[in-house]
Image (cartoon, rainbow, N blue to C red):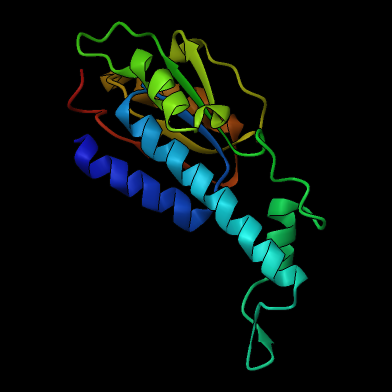
Length: 172
C-alpha cells in the first residue's frame, strides 16, 4: 500500500510540521517523508521572509503565529539548515522484496539526501535519546512483538509526538 500510505505520510508531515522523524522499515515511503520535510522547510522559510517584510497580515491582523515560525526557523532565519529537519531510516534489508537499499540513491538523485540518515540494522537495537523524535513511523512486520517495541521506543517520542504504524498485522 505505498500508493496510499505514502500520500498520507506526506500530507501528515506537511500539516503537522514535525521535523524529526524515525522510520522503521525504509523504502518507497521514505521518499514521501523526505519530500515533506523539504517542502516544509521551504514553506516556513518563505513565511519567515514574508514576516520580516511585514506581509503576513490580512486587514491589519497577523495570519501567522510569529512564535511558531520563530521556533521553526529561528528569529533570524538561521535554523533552517541542511540538518534541522531529518529522517532516520533503519532497516535490516533482509526482506525478500526490500526497497530500503535503493531509497538512499533515489533520495540523493532527487536532492533530498541531506535530510536522510540511513542505518542498516535491527530496529530493536536502536537507542535514541529521550524526547528526541517527533514522529515514529513503524512500517515493518513485528506482529506480536509490536507491544514490546512500542514500550521500548516510547521514551524517545517528544510530548505532542506521534507513533504511526503500518503493516503491523499483515507482515508477520
